[in-house]
Image 1 (cartoon, one colour):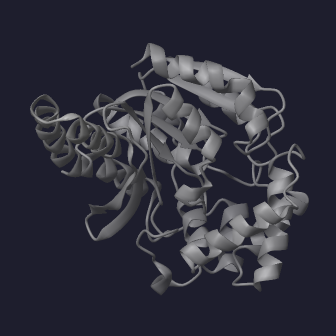
Image 2: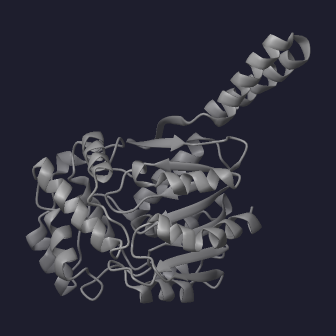
Length: 337
């Protein structure tokens, strides 16, 4: 609705351009630039769940809906990735998945019983979750509906790729293309679960709040491992960002409940084989969280997909990784716009 109001305002402003003096024309141009290029933030509703989004604009560019991964807030999308999309004529739209950031929290349900759930996970028993990845897919569609966007490119990162698979499968008419980054179609099991130090650090995130310093140290170590050592995260800038994100979300228990939604999900392999959208699958050869072979497997399941291996990429969307695949990614968007 806001977008329609903006366009109505633009029409009136263009009329002013023809009628008024040079000062009014300059003022009108400034206002017009603000209307077209300013960010829009707000909430979209999916039943009783409120999803906080940010629309970077410009409103007349082709929209790209970006779906973040496990525990990640919309602020986790790097500025250089957003900038690249805008510079190449696209309109990035990001949002907080349910249970993180400024979207509806389910903290009243508490943290899952991980002793019992880990037992079920490693023995192959069914796991229950208070919401599903399909519910989370409907959250993303709610953002598009709220912004009155009929068609958009869809980009999912890690868990966001899993959510995007459901969005693309059930609503292919709403999307121009699909891009999956560091994701997979298989539901994680004991064979794909993170091992060693990374596994212990991620498990540590599920067992309750730590002090601010402990959480910063843990974030530095997790990010260093996930990025395969490509980036130095032990910097004041990174620490400041961690603190800002902790303060923005307040409650960290959504990570645990989102994790349950992932491991409780059915295998999406039978679903993704029905995707006919032009699909680009990007996977780092050094990914320590989701094995490279799972990216290959997802590519094999989607007949309309192209596979782009990234030699020096781990599990994160680092600037080094983006420099390796950005031109192919933008080309994928361009030819399907």
